[in-house]
Length: 73
Image (cartoon, rainbow, N blue to C red; front, side):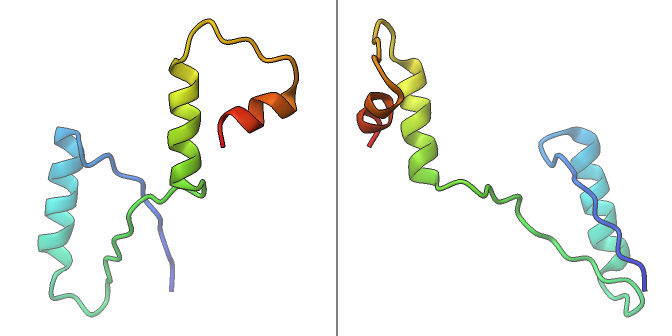
C-alpha cells in the first residue's frame, strides 16, 4: 500500500475544488481511503498569542534575554 500526503490550501479556489472532487470521488471507495487532518501547530497556542502580542509592542527595550522571557509570561 502506498500513502501520499498532500497539503491543500482550502482557502483557494483550486484547493476547494480539489477537496470536493476527492470527497465525492472516494466517498464509497474501499480501495482508496481519504483521511483528512487539520494542520496542527506543534507550539502551545497560549505561547503563540503572547509572542504575537509582544511583537506588536513598540518602544520597549530589554536588557537581557531573561528579562524578555519574564515579560511575556
